[in-house]
Image 1 (cartoon, protein in one colour):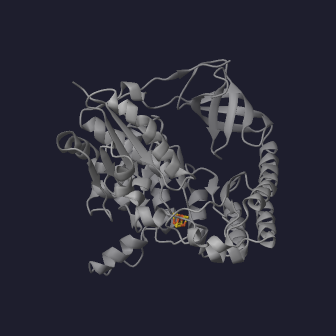
Image 2 (cartoon, rainbow, N blue to C red):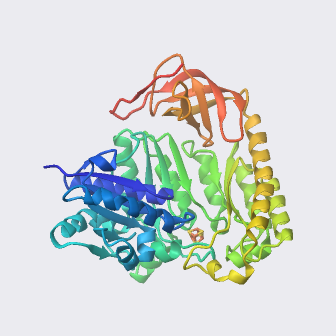
Image 3 (cartoon, rainbow, N blue to C red):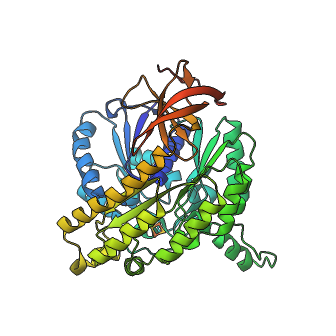
Length: 472
Ligand code: SF4
């Protein structure tokens, strides 16, 4: 009998992409996806330790999964992802009813480990580094079950060589390894042949792409390997793949941001006019404590260059307030830089310590929670103001959107996304298929979305699966 599975994802885009691969590996092994735990034989929890309270969420979920498991013979629980990588044996110790614990470097082994557990009982397999073979290295090289048929994530790099004091990623994802250039382009070609029109290149620090490839080529005696393939080259090559209308990337690191990336963005019509550019703090002192490797001045200089090179560029960011040792003066610097940067939107966070990071050790410098909450509110005012100004400036414009489906709040309205990554809700007199491109006139603005009016259909989706969406 066909076994059924469900994957629950906690976390970032990298995790969501890993979940697609876990699903793909299980389906390649003959399993079938279902929507709910009650219909499943195997529940996979793909965890993320970057998010706040990740441990509580995982162990809370495992607590209520125990009766689920006990209710039927043969049910299995799998814990994967970076929290599993970090906690290792602790997962099975705290929740001995878990069948499989696997980390970030062995997603490709999910089906084998599930089978192993069926025959031999509980197994924890955490690898310290990626095994040097394609499947182990890059989730994108594995079969996938994608949530949508018109867009796809493509991993270009795994791991990170930076040491930001607040971040657990280098510890759980390992050192930076770039995926070979040709392999990335081949995957994008295959996706385009399958009807995908929008790809997002994914990595922890995409604009240092290729640094390790050059190093390995030189170590292997390739004297010609003078210049690494640059992220800009990759962006250009991916954007030239026939059928690809939109290319996005996330996340670049400001310290490695180079003008050639902006030039490649400007030169390739498929590369979207959107840059996610994480500031983290506007205070040079705090940036130093964070080990970010840039100053606020340099950050803003590069931003000016980016906007000069790429017309109509939307810029988003991540900012943390209340980092250990942050003073009110540091916060004021952050507010000034945020105001000067004029972001289209910002993901703002109150610092919360992640076990295993340098910042988690700075206990004696932790900022009082009430002070951090108040600083957070001050920052929200600044970033929401600039978001609103940016959105209002788009009212009256005609924007191209890709249709994502019915709006979550009002299914009679269609949601689409502009090239600048802005969500637009609009009514349409015609049914529009998910993945279609349409133009809409922006009629009003809110801080987190735009409202629009359908103008015309630009392109039907190319993928074969028909998912009609009607609104209006
Ligand atoms: S660049 Fe810094 S924040 Fe980003 S993944 Fe690497 S260590 Fe973490």
